[in-house]
Image 1 (cartoon, helix red, strand yellow):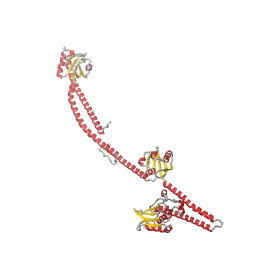
Image 2: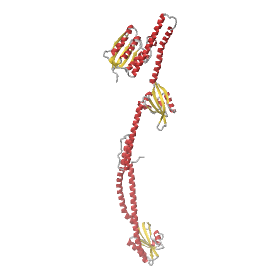
Image 3: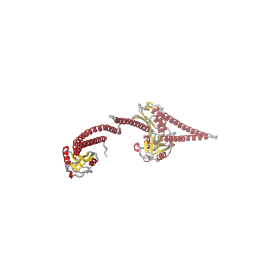
Image 4: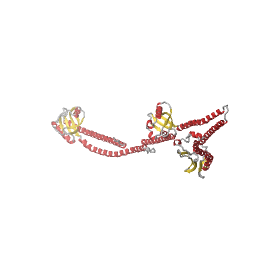
Length: 593
């Protein structure tokens, strides 16, 4: 059902009410006028009736037949009123308009009955004789205390209707004029009342669409003015609250987005309510697509699902670790607690995820490091222990054997010394790098490469290896000359050790973009692809037996890697079995900051 506007409701109500009031007033005025005219007619009839009684009393009761009837007709003609004389028994003895002989007995007529009792009788009814409504008035005719007859006079009410017709016509015409004028005035009043309400409605629609700057103009009327003021205050308060809520939400989103820890909220049905970017990254999810989905649908990890289920079922905080398998194995530490609303009602669970993959890997590296160091030290210590036990024997020993054991002890001590030296060097490089204590300054790269090559010139000549340095003299970079020389020296040491006699080792440097590339290329046996990703790890050896035989500690390439990192650079290797190897150190020519 279509709803009507308030303007038309007010207009119709006012107009209908006014018209009904005017109609009721017109009706009352007409009826009052009618009653007034009837009273006037009754007074006139009473006066006529008294004249008739006075004349009739003079001729009654001693009168001949027909005298009363002639009196009635004569007086009726003079008064323009119907006059009737009725005896106490009800017989009509005279009538101004009809033959009394043919008229019925009038004793039971209401006005006659009252007059026979000595009072004035009055009645209005339809006359069968005249075929119209008449007003009758009857009074007794007395001679002393004797009731002689009843004189009745009557007038048709059409006389009143004729006199009222013009008045009613004027009233109706005036009513129509007033109705038109009041319709216009009512429309103006309705428009004046509804216009502020319509303005408020339009402003409310703007507010509903998000325009919180909209304001309502204050009308002249006190009530609507108060309503407009209240509405404006409500909008202002709403704007402040929304601004506060928006600011708090933005701050909360900023905090959650900036957290390194992942935050995941689920409801009682294990559907995702919220997750920050860190959680989405750790779980490989898109935040917009994940919200509203069940955790079983979003994350296919049984351990996570079980942990969330246990958190929802438990009464206290929960902790655990899971592994996410994907492109990379990721270890996550989980902290779960109940999620409650402001009424302290449990609505779900809150899970905080910490990526401990690096810690796990560091723990693995530490464990492997300890195992490798123990293994590396175990061999020389065992050898030294055997030599010491042998030399401690009280039995005489052949000088040759004695010299052999002493030489063996010297080799093991040298090996241990090299291992400790490399460990200390690696530890110092890591320590200085983490604290930014590695001093870098612009220096020629060619000088560093030549000094490193000069150290291994004799070793290269011994194996008839051609050692060549190729570097522009004007090539400079921000470097720590001592560390960079040590890194290049380690690469040269490996290249010469593992290269065959009569081959070539090239040390070169060039500018590529904003980086300096230092390469050490050999023509050795090369390295299989499966070893390339791990070759820079501590104590990792491609051929352990051969490496130990050549006196390697397994830390040379790890030291190279950390020296490159200290220069904010990288080190890579390109190698194929039988094709030799090329190790490349890339460092920026200028260090940031």
